[in-house]
Structure formats: structure tokens, C-alpha cells
Image 1 (tube, one colour):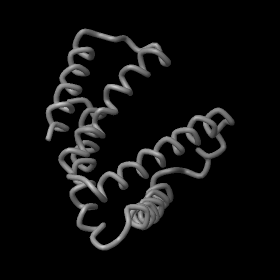
Image 2 (cartoon, helix red, strand yellow):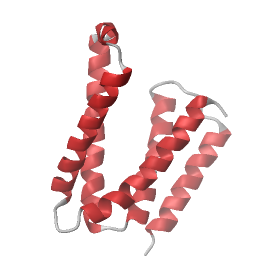
Image 3 (cartoon, one colour):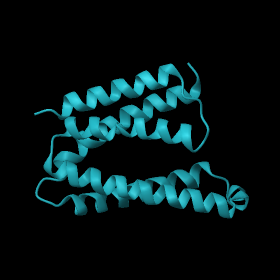
Length: 140
């Protein structure tokens, strides 16, 4: 298995844990407060990670375009987390998680249109299956 795939699987496992762990943490508080506390912890942990893993000299390689695109990514991450926590405050983790994973379809479509990545039959089928699973899980 390629290293990137191993990391992606770990990312999937931790992302799956996130909602299940966060739901009881929201007991008696708003999604906004829960997100704020969680994000504070994330910020501290990422900064500690950077201290250990990112050489100071790497910061000199950043360009304005790096800042622009990473800043835009931060904005979309923030919006995603705000709406995820609002949904988590009111709904079931299992349903919210599959809807959130619909982001796969959005990412594939945008990677194809914006980044020029290849749309293969395998990816198209994967998108259809994710959308079908999303629709089934959303049904009450």
C-alpha cells in the first residue's frame, strides 16, 4: 500500500470518530460553543505539530499564492465545520456523516472542472454510489 493511501485511511478513521466523539461533547451547549472549544484544541495541536515537524526555513518558501489558496481553504473549512456542528447539534451522527461525505462528489467534480484531473468511469461510478448511499441514509 502506498504511504498516501495509508494516510488517507487514517484520515478517514479519525474523521469517522470526530462526530461520534463530538456529539456527547455538545450535551447542554450550543454547536457554536462546541465548535469554538474544539477549534481551540485543534489550533493548539496543529501548532505543536508544526513546532515538531516544520523547519523554520520552510516558512521562507511560502508565496502570496500559497497564502491566498490556503486562506481560501481555511474559509471553506470554517464554513464546513460551522454547518457540521449546527447539524450535529440537532441530528443523528450517522445521517450527518454520510451527507458530509457527499463532499467526495463535490471534490471529484471540482477537481475535474478546475484542476483538470481525469474523470474516469471508476470515479463516476463512485460518485453515483456515494449519492445513492446519501439518498438512502437521508430517507426517514
